[in-house]
Amino acid sequence: MEAENLTRILFVGVVLLTVGITFWASRQSSGASNFYAGGRNFSGFQNGMAISGDYMSAASFLGISGAIALAGYDGFLYSIGFLVAWLVALLLVAELLRNSGKYTMADQLAFRMRQTPVRTAASTSTVVVSIFYLLAQMVGAGSLVSLLLGVSSETAKNLTITSVGLLMIFYVVVGGMRGTTWVQIVKAVLLMTGTILITVLVLAKFHFNISDLLGSAAANTGKGDAFLQPGLKYGGTATSKIDFISLALALVLGTAGLPHILIRFYTVPTAKAARTSVMWAIGLIGAFYLMTLVLGFGAAALLDTGEGSAVANSGGNLASPLLAEAVGGGAGTTGGAILLALVSAVAFATILAVVAGLTLTSASSVAHDLYATVFKKGDVGEKEEVRVARISAFVIGGVAIALSIPAQKVNIAFLVALAFAVAASANLPSLLFNLFWRGFNTRGAVWAIYGGLISAVGLVFFSPTVSGAPTAMFANHDWQWFPLSNPGIVSIPLGFLFGYLGSVTSKEPNADEKFIELEVRALTGAGSEKAVVH
Image 1 (cartoon, helix red, strand yellow):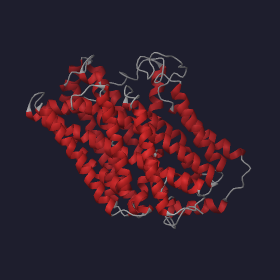
Image 2 (cartoon, one colour; image 1 turned 120 degrees about the vertical axis):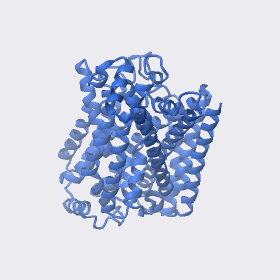
Image 3 (cartoon, rainbow, N blue to C red; image 1 turned 90 degrees about the vertical axis):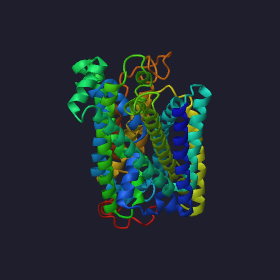
Image 4 (spheres, rainbow, N blue to C red; image 1 turned 30 degrees about the vertical axis):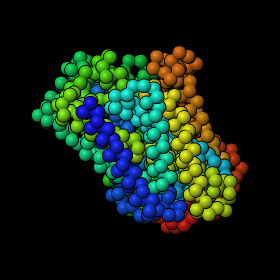
Protein backbone atom coordinates (compact mmCIF):
# COMPACT_ATOMS: atom_id res chain seq x y z
CA MET A 1 0.00 0.00 0.00
CA GLU A 2 2.90 2.33 0.80
CA ALA A 3 4.00 2.20 -2.86
CA GLU A 4 0.49 2.89 -4.13
CA ASN A 5 0.05 5.89 -1.82
CA LEU A 6 3.40 7.31 -2.91
CA THR A 7 2.40 6.84 -6.56
CA ARG A 8 -0.91 8.60 -5.94
CA ILE A 9 0.82 11.56 -4.27
CA LEU A 10 3.29 11.93 -7.18
CA PHE A 11 0.46 11.64 -9.73
CA VAL A 12 -1.55 14.35 -8.00
CA GLY A 13 1.65 16.45 -7.78
CA VAL A 14 2.21 16.19 -11.56
CA VAL A 15 -1.39 17.14 -12.29
CA LEU A 16 -1.36 20.11 -9.86
CA LEU A 17 1.95 21.36 -11.30
CA THR A 18 0.63 21.31 -14.87
CA VAL A 19 -2.71 22.87 -13.87
CA GLY A 20 -0.81 25.67 -12.06
CA ILE A 21 1.33 26.33 -15.15
CA THR A 22 -1.81 26.49 -17.31
CA PHE A 23 -3.45 29.09 -15.06
CA TRP A 24 -0.23 31.13 -15.01
CA ALA A 25 -0.01 31.02 -18.82
CA SER A 26 -3.68 31.96 -19.27
CA ARG A 27 -3.04 35.28 -17.50
CA GLN A 28 -0.53 36.20 -20.21
CA SER A 29 -2.57 34.88 -23.13
CA SER A 30 -4.86 37.05 -25.19
CA GLY A 31 -5.59 37.19 -28.91
CA ALA A 32 -5.21 34.64 -31.68
CA SER A 33 -1.41 34.86 -31.98
CA ASN A 34 -1.05 33.95 -28.29
CA PHE A 35 -3.62 31.16 -28.45
CA TYR A 36 -2.23 29.50 -31.62
CA ALA A 37 1.47 30.35 -31.52
CA GLY A 38 2.25 31.40 -27.93
CA GLY A 39 2.78 35.00 -29.10
CA ARG A 40 5.74 33.75 -31.25
CA ASN A 41 8.17 34.65 -28.48
CA PHE A 42 9.64 31.34 -27.33
CA SER A 43 13.42 31.05 -27.71
CA GLY A 44 14.99 28.31 -29.83
CA PHE A 45 16.07 26.41 -26.70
CA GLN A 46 12.60 26.63 -25.09
CA ASN A 47 10.91 25.52 -28.31
CA GLY A 48 13.45 22.69 -28.72
CA MET A 49 12.53 21.47 -25.23
CA ALA A 50 8.84 21.75 -26.11
CA ILE A 51 9.27 19.89 -29.44
CA SER A 52 11.08 17.06 -27.68
CA GLY A 53 8.32 17.12 -25.03
CA ASP A 54 5.74 16.83 -27.79
CA TYR A 55 7.61 14.10 -29.66
CA MET A 56 8.75 11.75 -26.88
CA SER A 57 5.31 10.30 -26.31
CA ALA A 58 4.13 7.47 -24.05
CA ALA A 59 4.66 5.16 -27.03
CA SER A 60 8.35 6.12 -27.02
CA PHE A 61 8.88 5.91 -23.28
CA LEU A 62 6.80 2.80 -22.60
CA GLY A 63 6.44 1.21 -26.04
CA ILE A 64 9.99 1.25 -27.44
CA SER A 65 11.75 0.06 -24.29
CA GLY A 66 9.10 -2.69 -24.16
CA ALA A 67 9.64 -3.62 -27.81
CA ILE A 68 13.41 -3.93 -27.16
CA ALA A 69 12.78 -6.00 -24.00
CA LEU A 70 10.63 -8.45 -25.99
CA ALA A 71 12.21 -8.47 -29.47
CA GLY A 72 15.81 -7.33 -28.85
CA TYR A 73 17.50 -5.92 -31.94
CA ASP A 74 14.26 -5.70 -33.93
CA GLY A 75 12.67 -3.57 -31.20
CA PHE A 76 15.57 -1.09 -31.36
CA LEU A 77 14.66 -0.33 -34.98
CA TYR A 78 11.74 1.77 -33.67
CA SER A 79 14.26 4.01 -31.86
CA ILE A 80 16.32 4.41 -35.02
CA GLY A 81 13.26 5.18 -37.16
CA PHE A 82 11.95 7.87 -34.81
CA LEU A 83 15.37 9.51 -34.55
CA VAL A 84 16.30 9.46 -38.26
CA ALA A 85 12.86 10.93 -39.00
CA TRP A 86 14.04 14.16 -37.40
CA LEU A 87 16.61 14.69 -40.10
CA VAL A 88 13.85 14.64 -42.74
CA ALA A 89 11.89 17.19 -40.71
CA LEU A 90 14.97 19.40 -40.28
CA LEU A 91 16.25 19.31 -43.84
CA LEU A 92 12.99 19.44 -45.79
CA VAL A 93 10.33 21.08 -43.68
CA ALA A 94 11.20 22.96 -40.47
CA GLU A 95 12.61 26.27 -41.65
CA LEU A 96 10.60 26.50 -44.90
CA LEU A 97 7.34 25.91 -43.07
CA ARG A 98 8.15 28.41 -40.32
CA ASN A 99 8.84 31.06 -42.97
CA SER A 100 5.81 30.48 -45.15
CA GLY A 101 2.91 29.80 -42.77
CA LYS A 102 1.07 31.48 -39.95
CA TYR A 103 -0.79 29.16 -37.56
CA THR A 104 -1.67 25.82 -39.19
CA MET A 105 -0.35 23.40 -41.82
CA ALA A 106 -3.06 24.54 -44.26
CA ASP A 107 -1.78 28.16 -44.22
CA GLN A 108 1.27 27.05 -46.17
CA LEU A 109 -0.74 24.91 -48.61
CA ALA A 110 -3.51 27.43 -49.26
CA PHE A 111 -1.08 30.29 -49.98
CA ARG A 112 -1.12 29.68 -53.75
CA MET A 113 -4.28 27.59 -54.06
CA ARG A 114 -8.05 28.08 -53.86
CA GLN A 115 -8.73 28.40 -50.14
CA THR A 116 -11.91 26.37 -49.57
CA PRO A 117 -11.06 22.90 -51.01
CA VAL A 118 -7.45 22.92 -49.78
CA ARG A 119 -8.20 24.08 -46.25
CA THR A 120 -11.09 21.60 -45.93
CA ALA A 121 -8.82 18.72 -47.02
CA ALA A 122 -5.89 19.79 -44.80
CA SER A 123 -8.15 20.25 -41.78
CA THR A 124 -9.75 16.81 -42.28
CA SER A 125 -6.33 15.19 -42.49
CA THR A 126 -5.07 17.08 -39.39
CA VAL A 127 -8.02 15.92 -37.31
CA VAL A 128 -7.76 12.26 -38.48
CA VAL A 129 -4.00 12.03 -37.74
CA SER A 130 -4.44 13.76 -34.38
CA ILE A 131 -7.26 11.46 -33.32
CA PHE A 132 -5.26 8.29 -34.15
CA TYR A 133 -2.38 9.69 -32.12
CA LEU A 134 -4.70 10.76 -29.26
CA LEU A 135 -6.13 7.23 -29.05
CA ALA A 136 -2.65 5.79 -28.52
CA GLN A 137 -1.86 8.20 -25.69
CA MET A 138 -5.18 7.81 -23.91
CA VAL A 139 -5.18 4.01 -24.13
CA GLY A 140 -1.66 4.18 -22.65
CA ALA A 141 -2.91 6.38 -19.82
CA GLY A 142 -5.69 3.93 -19.00
CA SER A 143 -3.43 0.88 -18.77
CA LEU A 144 -0.66 2.75 -16.92
CA VAL A 145 -2.85 4.24 -14.21
CA SER A 146 -4.84 1.05 -13.68
CA LEU A 147 -1.58 -0.87 -13.13
CA LEU A 148 -0.07 1.68 -10.76
CA LEU A 149 -3.08 2.33 -8.62
CA GLY A 150 -3.93 -1.35 -8.54
CA VAL A 151 -7.33 -0.97 -10.21
CA SER A 152 -8.36 -3.53 -12.76
CA SER A 153 -12.09 -2.91 -13.23
CA GLU A 154 -13.32 -1.65 -16.60
CA THR A 155 -15.11 1.26 -14.92
CA ALA A 156 -11.90 2.50 -13.28
CA LYS A 157 -10.01 2.36 -16.61
CA ASN A 158 -12.82 4.21 -18.36
CA LEU A 159 -12.80 6.86 -15.61
CA THR A 160 -9.04 7.29 -16.05
CA ILE A 161 -9.40 7.80 -19.81
CA THR A 162 -12.23 10.27 -19.26
CA SER A 163 -10.25 12.26 -16.67
CA VAL A 164 -7.19 12.46 -18.96
CA GLY A 165 -9.54 13.70 -21.71
CA LEU A 166 -11.02 16.38 -19.45
CA LEU A 167 -7.55 17.50 -18.29
CA MET A 168 -6.31 17.91 -21.88
CA ILE A 169 -9.41 19.94 -22.79
CA PHE A 170 -8.68 22.15 -19.76
CA TYR A 171 -5.01 22.75 -20.80
CA VAL A 172 -6.02 23.81 -24.30
CA VAL A 173 -9.11 25.86 -23.47
CA VAL A 174 -7.46 27.75 -20.60
CA GLY A 175 -3.78 27.88 -21.54
CA GLY A 176 -3.72 27.87 -25.37
CA MET A 177 -0.33 27.38 -27.04
CA ARG A 178 1.58 29.21 -24.30
CA GLY A 179 0.22 26.98 -21.51
CA THR A 180 0.63 23.84 -23.61
CA THR A 181 4.24 24.76 -24.47
CA TRP A 182 5.20 25.23 -20.81
CA VAL A 183 3.56 21.89 -19.94
CA GLN A 184 5.71 20.31 -22.70
CA ILE A 185 8.91 21.93 -21.35
CA VAL A 186 8.27 20.74 -17.77
CA LYS A 187 7.45 17.26 -19.07
CA ALA A 188 10.68 17.14 -21.15
CA VAL A 189 12.73 18.02 -18.03
CA LEU A 190 10.93 15.37 -15.94
CA LEU A 191 11.25 12.71 -18.65
CA MET A 192 14.97 13.32 -19.28
CA THR A 193 15.72 13.38 -15.52
CA GLY A 194 13.81 10.14 -14.88
CA THR A 195 15.32 8.37 -17.89
CA ILE A 196 18.90 9.43 -17.03
CA LEU A 197 18.44 8.24 -13.43
CA ILE A 198 17.16 4.77 -14.43
CA THR A 199 19.81 4.45 -17.17
CA VAL A 200 22.64 5.19 -14.70
CA LEU A 201 21.21 2.73 -12.15
CA VAL A 202 20.88 -0.02 -14.78
CA LEU A 203 24.43 0.54 -16.07
CA ALA A 204 25.73 0.56 -12.47
CA LYS A 205 24.28 -2.97 -12.03
CA PHE A 206 26.58 -4.07 -14.87
CA HIS A 207 29.60 -1.95 -13.79
CA PHE A 208 28.98 0.38 -16.76
CA ASN A 209 29.93 -2.41 -19.14
CA ILE A 210 27.53 -2.43 -22.14
CA SER A 211 28.82 -5.82 -23.28
CA ASP A 212 27.85 -7.39 -19.91
CA LEU A 213 24.41 -5.79 -20.16
CA LEU A 214 23.78 -7.20 -23.65
CA GLY A 215 25.14 -10.63 -22.69
CA SER A 216 22.91 -10.84 -19.60
CA ALA A 217 19.88 -9.74 -21.66
CA ALA A 218 20.53 -12.45 -24.28
CA ALA A 219 21.03 -15.11 -21.56
CA ASN A 220 18.07 -14.06 -19.37
CA THR A 221 15.55 -14.12 -22.23
CA GLY A 222 16.65 -17.63 -23.17
CA LYS A 223 16.97 -16.58 -26.81
CA GLY A 224 20.77 -16.38 -26.78
CA ASP A 225 22.56 -14.57 -29.60
CA ALA A 226 19.36 -14.48 -31.69
CA PHE A 227 18.14 -11.75 -29.28
CA LEU A 228 20.98 -9.47 -30.43
CA GLN A 229 20.59 -10.25 -34.15
CA PRO A 230 18.01 -8.99 -36.68
CA GLY A 231 15.08 -11.28 -37.41
CA LEU A 232 13.31 -12.13 -34.14
CA LYS A 233 10.28 -10.05 -35.03
CA TYR A 234 10.76 -9.18 -38.72
CA GLY A 235 12.55 -12.27 -39.97
CA GLY A 236 11.49 -15.33 -41.86
CA THR A 237 8.80 -14.65 -44.44
CA ALA A 238 9.04 -12.16 -47.29
CA THR A 239 5.81 -10.51 -46.05
CA SER A 240 7.29 -9.70 -42.62
CA LYS A 241 10.39 -8.21 -44.27
CA ILE A 242 8.26 -5.99 -46.54
CA ASP A 243 6.18 -5.08 -43.47
CA PHE A 244 9.36 -3.94 -41.77
CA ILE A 245 10.32 -1.70 -44.73
CA SER A 246 6.77 -0.33 -44.69
CA LEU A 247 6.99 0.49 -40.97
CA ALA A 248 10.41 2.13 -41.45
CA LEU A 249 9.09 4.30 -44.31
CA ALA A 250 6.09 5.41 -42.23
CA LEU A 251 8.26 6.29 -39.22
CA VAL A 252 10.95 8.14 -41.16
CA LEU A 253 8.61 10.13 -43.44
CA GLY A 254 5.72 10.53 -41.00
CA THR A 255 7.37 12.98 -38.60
CA ALA A 256 7.70 15.65 -41.29
CA GLY A 257 3.92 15.43 -41.83
CA LEU A 258 2.69 15.27 -38.21
CA PRO A 259 0.52 18.37 -37.71
CA HIS A 260 1.23 18.75 -33.97
CA ILE A 261 4.99 18.82 -34.66
CA LEU A 262 4.62 21.15 -37.68
CA ILE A 263 2.74 23.88 -35.79
CA ARG A 264 5.51 23.97 -33.17
CA PHE A 265 7.70 25.78 -35.73
CA TYR A 266 5.30 28.74 -35.66
CA THR A 267 5.96 29.52 -31.98
CA VAL A 268 9.42 31.04 -32.57
CA PRO A 269 10.15 34.60 -33.77
CA THR A 270 12.67 33.87 -36.55
CA ALA A 271 13.82 31.18 -38.98
CA LYS A 272 17.13 31.00 -37.10
CA ALA A 273 15.24 30.18 -33.89
CA ALA A 274 13.31 27.48 -35.79
CA ARG A 275 16.64 25.88 -36.80
CA THR A 276 18.04 26.23 -33.26
CA SER A 277 14.95 24.60 -31.79
CA VAL A 278 15.27 21.60 -34.10
CA MET A 279 18.97 21.23 -33.22
CA TRP A 280 18.12 21.21 -29.50
CA ALA A 281 15.27 18.79 -30.13
CA ILE A 282 17.56 16.41 -32.07
CA GLY A 283 20.11 16.50 -29.23
CA LEU A 284 17.53 15.76 -26.54
CA ILE A 285 15.61 13.20 -28.56
CA GLY A 286 18.83 11.48 -29.72
CA ALA A 287 20.05 11.14 -26.12
CA PHE A 288 16.64 9.85 -25.06
CA TYR A 289 16.44 7.17 -27.76
CA LEU A 290 19.96 5.98 -26.96
CA MET A 291 18.83 5.58 -23.35
CA THR A 292 15.80 3.51 -24.46
CA LEU A 293 18.41 0.99 -25.62
CA VAL A 294 19.69 0.65 -22.02
CA LEU A 295 16.14 0.59 -20.61
CA GLY A 296 15.02 -2.11 -23.06
CA PHE A 297 18.02 -4.42 -22.74
CA GLY A 298 18.11 -3.67 -18.98
CA ALA A 299 14.51 -4.88 -18.70
CA ALA A 300 15.40 -8.00 -20.72
CA ALA A 301 18.39 -8.68 -18.41
CA LEU A 302 16.73 -7.96 -15.04
CA LEU A 303 13.03 -8.85 -15.49
CA ASP A 304 11.08 -11.91 -16.56
CA THR A 305 9.96 -11.19 -20.15
CA GLY A 306 8.79 -14.72 -21.03
CA GLU A 307 5.27 -15.88 -21.94
CA GLY A 308 2.74 -14.94 -19.28
CA SER A 309 5.01 -12.42 -17.52
CA ALA A 310 3.72 -8.94 -16.60
CA VAL A 311 5.95 -7.39 -19.29
CA ALA A 312 4.76 -9.76 -22.04
CA ASN A 313 1.10 -9.46 -21.01
CA SER A 314 1.26 -5.65 -21.31
CA GLY A 315 2.76 -5.92 -24.83
CA GLY A 316 5.99 -4.55 -23.33
CA ASN A 317 4.33 -1.33 -22.11
CA LEU A 318 5.22 -2.02 -18.46
CA ALA A 319 8.92 -2.77 -19.05
CA SER A 320 10.15 0.72 -17.99
CA PRO A 321 8.08 1.08 -14.78
CA LEU A 322 8.90 -2.49 -13.63
CA LEU A 323 12.59 -1.98 -14.47
CA ALA A 324 12.59 1.19 -12.31
CA GLU A 325 11.16 -0.85 -9.43
CA ALA A 326 13.80 -3.58 -9.94
CA VAL A 327 16.83 -1.22 -9.96
CA GLY A 328 15.43 0.68 -6.96
CA GLY A 329 15.60 -2.46 -4.85
CA GLY A 330 12.78 -4.65 -6.13
CA ALA A 331 9.10 -5.08 -5.31
CA GLY A 332 8.18 -4.27 -1.71
CA THR A 333 11.23 -2.07 -1.01
CA THR A 334 11.02 1.68 -0.39
CA GLY A 335 13.58 2.42 -3.12
CA GLY A 336 11.63 0.29 -5.60
CA ALA A 337 8.37 1.99 -4.65
CA ILE A 338 9.86 5.49 -5.02
CA LEU A 339 11.36 4.80 -8.47
CA LEU A 340 8.23 3.00 -9.72
CA ALA A 341 6.11 5.97 -8.60
CA LEU A 342 8.58 8.44 -10.16
CA VAL A 343 8.70 6.70 -13.55
CA SER A 344 4.93 6.29 -13.60
CA ALA A 345 4.33 9.95 -12.76
CA VAL A 346 6.77 10.91 -15.55
CA ALA A 347 4.93 8.65 -18.00
CA PHE A 348 1.66 10.26 -16.95
CA ALA A 349 3.11 13.77 -17.43
CA THR A 350 4.28 12.58 -20.87
CA ILE A 351 0.77 11.54 -21.83
CA LEU A 352 -0.81 14.78 -20.56
CA ALA A 353 1.64 16.96 -22.48
CA VAL A 354 1.25 15.09 -25.77
CA VAL A 355 -2.55 14.94 -25.70
CA ALA A 356 -2.71 18.69 -24.99
CA GLY A 357 -0.51 19.41 -28.04
CA LEU A 358 -2.63 17.17 -30.26
CA THR A 359 -5.93 18.67 -29.13
CA LEU A 360 -4.62 22.20 -29.66
CA THR A 361 -3.51 21.29 -33.20
CA SER A 362 -6.90 19.88 -34.17
CA ALA A 363 -8.87 22.67 -32.51
CA SER A 364 -6.80 25.42 -34.17
CA SER A 365 -7.15 23.74 -37.56
CA VAL A 366 -10.95 23.51 -37.20
CA ALA A 367 -11.26 27.15 -36.05
CA HIS A 368 -8.65 28.77 -38.31
CA ASP A 369 -9.04 26.69 -41.49
CA LEU A 370 -12.65 25.55 -41.51
CA TYR A 371 -14.58 28.15 -39.51
CA ALA A 372 -12.69 31.38 -40.19
CA THR A 373 -11.65 30.76 -43.80
CA VAL A 374 -14.06 28.24 -45.34
CA PHE A 375 -17.34 29.14 -43.60
CA LYS A 376 -16.80 32.84 -42.79
CA LYS A 377 -14.53 33.61 -45.81
CA GLY A 378 -12.06 35.46 -43.54
CA ASP A 379 -14.71 37.83 -42.16
CA VAL A 380 -14.25 36.93 -38.49
CA GLY A 381 -12.78 38.66 -35.45
CA GLU A 382 -9.83 37.19 -33.50
CA LYS A 383 -11.92 36.75 -30.34
CA GLU A 384 -14.61 34.81 -32.16
CA GLU A 385 -12.04 32.58 -33.87
CA VAL A 386 -10.37 31.73 -30.55
CA ARG A 387 -13.80 31.04 -29.00
CA VAL A 388 -14.53 28.54 -31.82
CA ALA A 389 -11.11 26.91 -31.24
CA ARG A 390 -12.02 26.43 -27.57
CA ILE A 391 -15.39 24.88 -28.46
CA SER A 392 -13.62 22.60 -31.00
CA ALA A 393 -11.26 21.43 -28.23
CA PHE A 394 -14.30 20.25 -26.24
CA VAL A 395 -15.75 18.40 -29.25
CA ILE A 396 -12.44 16.76 -30.29
CA GLY A 397 -11.72 15.81 -26.67
CA GLY A 398 -15.17 14.21 -26.45
CA VAL A 399 -14.63 12.22 -29.67
CA ALA A 400 -11.21 11.04 -28.45
CA ILE A 401 -12.67 9.89 -25.10
CA ALA A 402 -15.55 8.06 -26.86
CA LEU A 403 -13.17 6.23 -29.26
CA SER A 404 -10.49 5.43 -26.65
CA ILE A 405 -12.77 3.46 -24.35
CA PRO A 406 -13.45 0.63 -26.89
CA ALA A 407 -9.84 0.74 -28.20
CA GLN A 408 -8.25 -0.33 -24.90
CA LYS A 409 -7.14 -3.75 -26.13
CA VAL A 410 -5.18 -2.30 -29.06
CA ASN A 411 -1.39 -2.06 -28.96
CA ILE A 412 -0.16 1.52 -28.42
CA ALA A 413 2.78 1.32 -30.81
CA PHE A 414 0.46 0.12 -33.62
CA LEU A 415 -1.81 3.15 -33.20
CA VAL A 416 1.17 5.52 -33.31
CA ALA A 417 2.71 3.84 -36.35
CA LEU A 418 -0.71 4.17 -38.02
CA ALA A 419 -0.82 7.92 -37.29
CA PHE A 420 2.67 8.20 -38.84
CA ALA A 421 1.57 6.26 -41.94
CA VAL A 422 -1.45 8.54 -42.45
CA ALA A 423 0.70 11.68 -41.91
CA ALA A 424 3.33 10.47 -44.41
CA SER A 425 0.69 9.48 -47.00
CA ALA A 426 -1.67 12.47 -46.77
CA ASN A 427 0.33 15.48 -45.50
CA LEU A 428 3.90 15.02 -46.67
CA PRO A 429 3.28 14.75 -50.47
CA SER A 430 1.21 17.95 -50.56
CA LEU A 431 3.68 19.88 -48.33
CA LEU A 432 6.70 18.89 -50.45
CA PHE A 433 5.00 19.40 -53.83
CA ASN A 434 3.78 22.82 -52.68
CA LEU A 435 7.26 23.93 -51.64
CA PHE A 436 9.25 22.49 -54.53
CA TRP A 437 7.03 22.03 -57.62
CA ARG A 438 5.84 25.01 -59.66
CA GLY A 439 3.14 22.98 -61.48
CA PHE A 440 1.35 21.89 -58.28
CA ASN A 441 -2.21 23.23 -57.99
CA THR A 442 -5.47 23.01 -56.05
CA ARG A 443 -6.69 19.74 -57.58
CA GLY A 444 -3.25 18.17 -56.98
CA ALA A 445 -3.31 19.22 -53.30
CA VAL A 446 -6.83 17.92 -52.71
CA TRP A 447 -6.15 14.61 -54.52
CA ALA A 448 -2.84 14.12 -52.66
CA ILE A 449 -4.42 14.66 -49.24
CA TYR A 450 -7.61 12.63 -49.76
CA GLY A 451 -5.84 9.97 -51.88
CA GLY A 452 -3.15 9.38 -49.25
CA LEU A 453 -5.62 9.57 -46.37
CA ILE A 454 -8.19 7.17 -47.84
CA SER A 455 -5.60 4.66 -49.09
CA ALA A 456 -3.77 4.60 -45.71
CA VAL A 457 -6.91 4.25 -43.58
CA GLY A 458 -8.56 1.86 -46.08
CA LEU A 459 -5.57 -0.51 -46.27
CA VAL A 460 -5.31 -0.59 -42.47
CA PHE A 461 -9.01 -1.50 -42.26
CA PHE A 462 -8.37 -4.57 -44.45
CA SER A 463 -5.05 -5.47 -42.75
CA PRO A 464 -4.32 -8.15 -40.11
CA THR A 465 -4.21 -5.42 -37.43
CA VAL A 466 -7.99 -4.94 -37.62
CA SER A 467 -9.31 -8.46 -38.34
CA GLY A 468 -8.30 -12.03 -39.11
CA ALA A 469 -5.43 -12.37 -36.61
CA PRO A 470 -5.32 -13.33 -32.90
CA THR A 471 -3.91 -9.89 -31.98
CA ALA A 472 -6.35 -7.93 -34.19
CA MET A 473 -8.88 -5.37 -32.92
CA PHE A 474 -11.71 -7.66 -34.07
CA ALA A 475 -10.03 -11.03 -33.55
CA ASN A 476 -13.29 -12.99 -34.02
CA HIS A 477 -13.99 -11.56 -37.48
CA ASP A 478 -12.07 -11.86 -40.73
CA TRP A 479 -12.33 -9.44 -43.65
CA GLN A 480 -8.56 -9.11 -44.06
CA TRP A 481 -7.04 -9.25 -47.57
CA PHE A 482 -4.12 -6.80 -47.32
CA PRO A 483 -1.14 -8.77 -45.89
CA LEU A 484 0.89 -5.94 -44.27
CA SER A 485 0.27 -4.44 -40.80
CA ASN A 486 1.53 -1.01 -41.85
CA PRO A 487 0.28 0.45 -45.16
CA GLY A 488 3.16 2.95 -45.66
CA ILE A 489 4.97 1.18 -48.52
CA VAL A 490 1.78 1.34 -50.65
CA SER A 491 -0.06 4.42 -49.39
CA ILE A 492 2.89 6.89 -49.33
CA PRO A 493 3.74 6.43 -53.06
CA LEU A 494 -0.03 6.60 -53.77
CA GLY A 495 -0.21 10.01 -52.02
CA PHE A 496 2.57 11.35 -54.26
CA LEU A 497 1.01 9.74 -57.35
CA PHE A 498 -2.45 11.26 -56.69
CA GLY A 499 -0.84 14.68 -56.14
CA TYR A 500 0.97 14.41 -59.49
CA LEU A 501 -2.08 13.12 -61.44
CA GLY A 502 -4.39 15.75 -59.94
CA SER A 503 -2.00 18.54 -60.91
CA VAL A 504 -1.32 17.43 -64.51
CA THR A 505 -5.01 16.78 -65.30
CA SER A 506 -6.20 20.14 -63.92
CA LYS A 507 -7.02 23.04 -66.27
CA GLU A 508 -6.29 25.59 -63.51
CA PRO A 509 -3.83 28.29 -64.68
CA ASN A 510 -0.52 28.26 -62.81
CA ALA A 511 -0.17 31.01 -60.20
CA ASP A 512 3.47 31.68 -61.08
CA GLU A 513 3.84 34.89 -59.09
CA LYS A 514 2.38 33.16 -56.03
CA PHE A 515 4.87 30.26 -56.38
CA ILE A 516 7.80 32.68 -56.69
CA GLU A 517 6.55 34.66 -53.68
CA LEU A 518 6.15 31.45 -51.64
CA GLU A 519 9.64 30.32 -52.66
CA VAL A 520 11.21 33.64 -51.62
CA ARG A 521 9.23 33.67 -48.39
CA ALA A 522 10.09 30.03 -47.56
CA LEU A 523 13.79 30.54 -48.17
CA THR A 524 14.21 33.98 -46.58
CA GLY A 525 11.33 34.45 -44.15
CA ALA A 526 10.47 37.81 -45.75
CA GLY A 527 6.87 38.79 -45.00
CA SER A 528 6.07 35.71 -42.92
CA GLU A 529 4.57 37.76 -40.10
CA LYS A 530 1.81 39.12 -42.34
CA ALA A 531 -1.56 37.42 -42.58
CA VAL A 532 -1.47 34.57 -45.04
CA VAL A 533 -5.11 34.72 -46.09
CA HIS A 534 -5.40 37.05 -49.09
